[in-house]
Image (cartoon, rainbow, N blue to C red; front, side):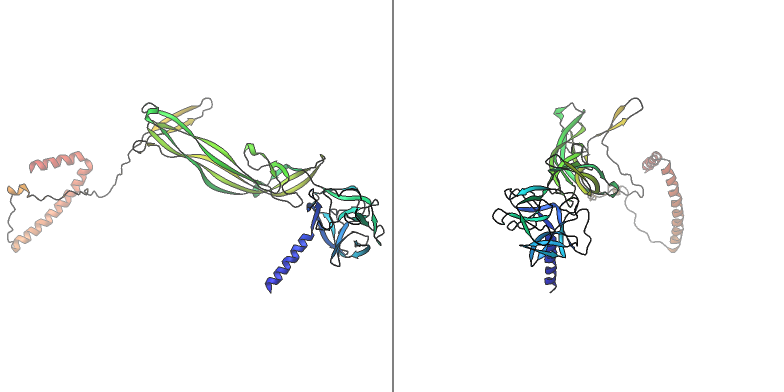
Length: 465
């Protein structure tokens, strides 16, 4: 039940939106949508005498209207009671619920073109109806009374009009309402509102390059400048949005927000984003030592900016006439920005080890400019650890042969120790422990004095042994 209700409401909304559309005659004999004119719903109790209503004459208050009578769309004009006086075949009907023709955005240009039964319906004529099969067009007679031209009525066609608002008469000449569309747009005096800008950046790698300086290309231990190029495709996108009352896809020119010098002013189709890709190259270089190489990469940011803008839209017509309108909208662009070269560490070609690098320092005094090139050699880092010294681990097997010193100094046999001997030995052990502690302190002081003294003592002890 809910789905059926939603479907019914959707169909009503679509019908209402479709009824607001105004159709004009195209060069191919079909009815196409007008970009500037609209039908506005109203009634006899509302005040619709606004400045954007299309009228039969500039000084009159008569507006062009249409409405439904017995499920038939009938055209007509308004009277002093704010009713729509419509023509239903050969009689006049009065409608309290109807629609009036308006120039909603005040960007339309229309005119009344002379017509008679021998004149073909001109391109751009405004239609009352919505289908080409039963199309009738907005017109007026020689006395500026709004009428309806039916090209198929009475073979040659005629105009239905009601001069007195009581009966319908038919005229064979008068004028027909024609909308004139511009041939191009131009944006001038454009102002971008910077503080409301929203920017998004996405990093991208454009390409890679490896620069090498072989030994046969230069003298040994010589520095040279090596260069190459990286080719890539740069993408651009510019979009000014689509505004109501403007013709989509019409040729337009306008400025950009942060485009390059070559894209300060672009030509595009109004209401459609301008997207294109350009092939570009970027030069990369580095100073290398003979027999070394370095890897380079070109990186950039894909920057998307969105911000409001205000501008003056200049509409140019085929006869050279121009009309200006103030507009405002949202501008969006996507560019390739912050292009930079990322240089890796140089290396020797033969073994891949680290190679020397060059660092260029530029000093700019008040009167002269000097450039100094310093060379940094590749060095080996040594790790110094402070703390407890531990012997280095080894994988050599333990000795399996008998110690030759045991031949001259045999091991003493263990003797039985009495209680008195054990007491005296315990006292000696305590004495030796204290002496050993004092010796350790002394040894620490000696070690602090320097390794040469320690080595000398070690050598003397060895000689005594």
